[in-house]
Image 1 (tube, rainbow, N blue to C red):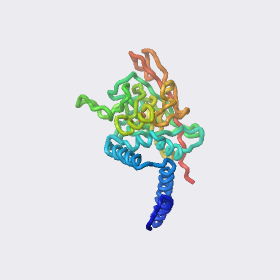
Image 2 (cartoon, helix red, strand yellow):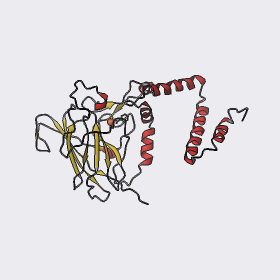
Image 3 (cartoon, rainbow, N blue to C red):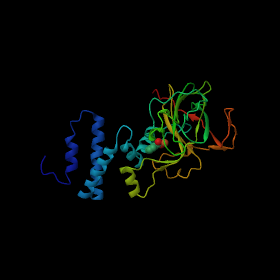
Length: 293
Ligand code: BEZ
Ligand code: FE
């Protein structure tokens, strides 16, 4: 393998991987090399641009730690995360659509009974959320595991805020519930607000250079699991949000946009008196059965 030139290099690299034992790895790496080389040829990549790309990826790696995942952010903002989600979550039309997972799920969130207040000290106007977990035929899914997480009124997740007091609960505006015998669930929380994805790093610089904003429309995250059904990872977006048509990570689906109804102070759905403006949201989730075939 000598005297390789710009016309023979692609085949040489592909041939060099011919002993790969893992057939899938070989398929993926062959295609990756072919597309990378085609890209470099198509844009006539200069040495300076190549060096800039290496610097950029180095910065993405340097800012990444156990709390900040800049590579996922990069994938999200380039639409790769949503593409992978979409092509791996094809379901019958009546099922709830999936969307991106995002970086703010954490393990170990508190368990709540139905009716519990998952805000746990997070700030925001009260929001009462209810719905049902259903199968495609409309039958209730009992005891489904419902994970929910969201931003507060400033657009921050708990993991993004350094607590000011040692008594501040670790997990705020996130929790785990189970659907009841009739598939229903309900909880109290706070109104989630739109927020910019973390943009103080290399991905933020790239967005700026591309003339893009970093905002996501207000949403609640849900992950729903139940035996016999595919796990559903999705969001419910707030109708009317000004970023619904320019989500920085391309995650909005019309079927996931719902009305968060505003109410004057008064009696809330759970029978308690609320002295401030508050909101209600009702949404039913339809799970896709696992294909046993
Ligand atoms: C989120 O919705 O939590 C999220 C998704 C992608 C990137 C950043 C945040
Ligand atoms: Fe989010």
